Image (tube, rainbow, N blue to C red; front, side, top):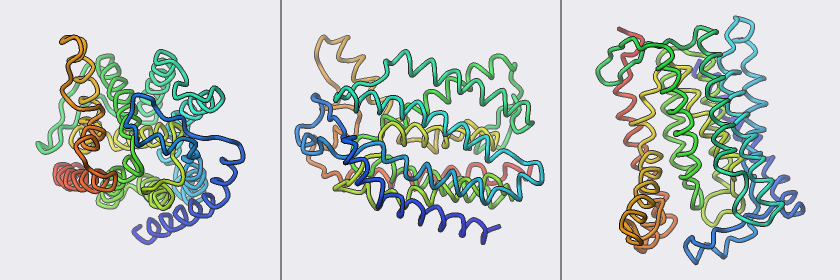
Length: 330
């Protein structure tokens, strides 16, 4: 299994690198440039016009690789990797539509918040129901670190699970604020899933995790500071969907709390900033939110934010793995 995963990783990496050589110039010709938020850090204005929707390059690589190397699992009747892929693609489609509207209007606002929320909610509910029908998911909640499960009333589980998915996907999207950040912090997350798949001999999950890892490493070669391309909502929503779907396919959604610690902190910093600003009529907790911008305002370079946040994520990925290592050895 490890050999297959290494081959999948390498193929996805190479396809992404090749796709980038053609896609970045094409995005420039299409004038698919990023519009920078006017209320963001002033030095980010220099990134205005950098090609966006670059997530298409690793999405294409992952799709091709997962389908090609997932055939043996499909012949065995295991389609869980295709469910993860389909779920991620649907979220990526929402992101693509959002990016397209932004590029078309030449502004940083695409779909409305309500439009995105409703689309994401429908997809989340559809995934949960499909996983239940396929038998890949139960309403029994697994608690990491304690290695116990407890049953939950299914309608309640459905509601909470949908909330977790929509929240997590948007948290990944919020983290995509500086060069390479969401790509970098997602590498340890993907390694966690690859290691768990290998530990439990979950071949389908292993194929997808390896393909995702290869795609992200390839994309980081273009996305690291100074970024030649941004993944856009196309890539970040696809990535968020993949991270969530893998947790649900493994039937351990609660692992997203420690595993996605930076995603959670980024989102909470944004929520707290807005609430505190409204309550105090103009005061702020952070110099700027999400929190990666706060550290930038404190003088951290984008490379330092990338390195520190990725290191934190690597630590929590290891902690999370220790918390679930006995998942299927109960």
